[in-house]
Length: 279
Image (cartoon, rainbow, N blue to C red):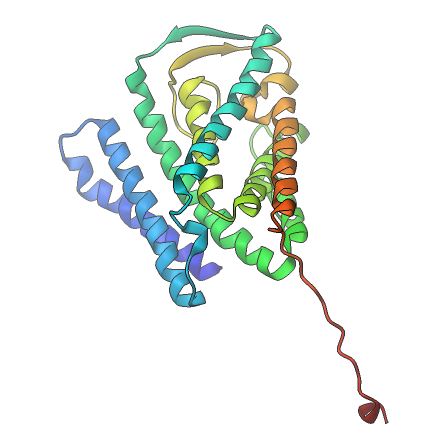
């Protein structure tokens, strides 16, 4: 697990170094540079994972098989966007969300690039390495519990954290995304859910997303109202509706995974003592 994380982080760091050393000195639009770097980081993270675990595990890397890439990519990307849209829709229906300006569509290129990097790099490390290996040793149920607790611990001291924001984050990253992997047994589903999620917020709706540095989205929005609906300074992704919808989505993934017999169950066998040894 440590070696795998180290390899992916080193490869991504190399791409970032290449950008600062070469690409930033070339007279190209910033959006073009961002997309080039994002594609490179997604490719090296994927290739690094495949080469490392094919050699280490001596197996085909089915979790990154391209057989169902299109279906998982479309399903995942739309799931991420639809979930974010529902969060914002509820705020809008409550009368506390307003669009004050619309930017050119071209502004979406930079959010897409950041979402591409976040989706591939984060989920290859978090789900592909950490969750997958943990699940192999503990089973699906215990691995999910550990992941939820882990994300609570990691976010409990973040700036502006509340009980609701921490719970919502744990449901999203610690439960829903791993559950989507358990259902599909493909890393592409959680990767593209994460991509759609980060692309929509703030790329489309202009809402706050603490994990990205995008300052402008397609819509310049004004959000007000109770924190439990808006998410406050941590954005709609940490609202009450986000917690509930991600819990329901993750539960649906697990129900479907169980029907597909995709849950990992660890069986413990007691060692019987023979009569001769007892004697």
